[in-house]
Image (cartoon, rainbow, N blue to C red; front, side, top):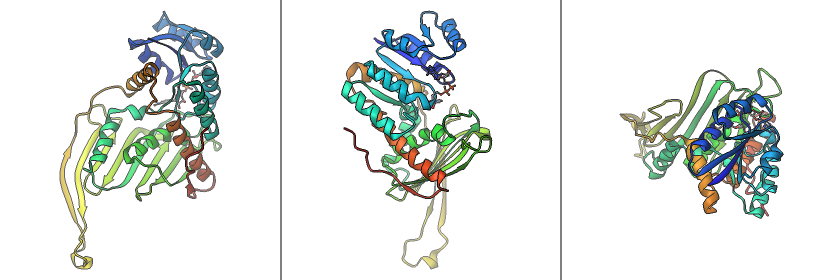
Length: 341
Ligand SMILES: NC(=O)c1ccc[n+]([C@@H]2O[C@H](COP(=O)([O-])OP(=O)(O)OC[C@H]3O[C@@H](n4cnc5c(N)ncnc54)[C@H](O)[C@@H]3O)[C@@H](O)[C@H]2O)c1
C-alpha cells in the first residue's frame, strides 16, 4: 500500500485524486492546494482524505509519494522539496521549465534512490501502444511524415506558452512512434490575446530518417481537435483522440511510384484506394494506467517508462523550439545527451 499525496487540485489534479481513490494498492492520504474552495470540494467527495493549503504539511503527513499537478513554473521547486523529504515524485508535464532544473531533479532522485516520473499520459495510452506496434511491424511502410493538431478554445495559461503546455503530448507520441530522436527543431507562433504568451504555435521536428513531424497547437480554435495523421509509404493512419469509439482508422491508401528507370514514360504514379480498417482499442483510461505504473515502480523499485530522463528529453526539445520561436523560426540543433552526474 502506497500512501499518496497530491498537490494541485485545479483542472487536472482531481483526476489523480479520483484514480488513487479507486486503486486498492494506494491510500490517498492528503491533498494540497492553495485554494480552500478546491479542498472543500475534495473533502465533500472524499471525507476520509486530509487536506491542507501548506505543502510542508503534506511532506510531513506520512505520504510515500507525491503527485505534482500545479502550474509548470512551480514543478521544480515542489518536486525538489519532495525529493529532499525522500518522497517518490510524479511531476506533470512538462517535468520542469528548463533542462537545468530537470537534470537537477534526476540527479537528486538517483542520489536518494527515489522514483522520479514525468506525467507523460500518452506513454500509457492504449491507442499509442497500438500505433507504436503498427509502425514497428512495417505495415505502414516507411513513415514519410506525421502531422499533429491539438486545438481548442483555451485553457489559457499565464506561466507557459501554448507550445510548452500542449506540445509535450505530441512530442511524446512522435518519439514513441518513430523510436528516434529529432536532430533539428523549428517553431513559429504568435500571441493574440496576450502578446507576451504565444497562443498558437507550429512546431517542426526533423528526424535522421528524413521523417518530418509537424505539430500545430492552439488555445484559440473553435473546435476541440486531438488528431494525429501518420503517412507511410504503404498505408496511412489517423488517430483521433477526441473520438470515443473509433480512435484509429487505418487507410490502405498509397501511391505506386514508377521505378522502371524511365519515369517520364510512366508518370503520373497510380493512386491506390483500399479498405479503411478501424481496429479495436481497449478502453482503458491512460491516466489510470499511468497511476498503476507509478505504484508498481515504487513497490518493485523499477524505473518508470516516463522517467526523469524522458521528461528531460521533452524539455530539451521545448527549449530548442522556444529559441526558434523567438528567433523567427530558424532550425535549432538539439543538444546531444546532457551529462548527468
Ligand atoms: N497530462 C495531461 O493530459 C494534462 C492535462 C492538463 C494539465 N496537465 C498538467 O497539470 C498541471 C496542472 O494543470 P491544471 O490544468 O490542473 O492547472 P490549474 O491552474 O487548473 O490548477 C493548478 C492548481 O494548482 C494549485 N497550486 C498552484 N501552486 C500551488 C502550490 N504552490 N501549492 C499548492 N497548490 C498550488 C492552484 O491553486 C490550482 O488549483 C500542469 O503541469 C499541466 O501541464 C496535464
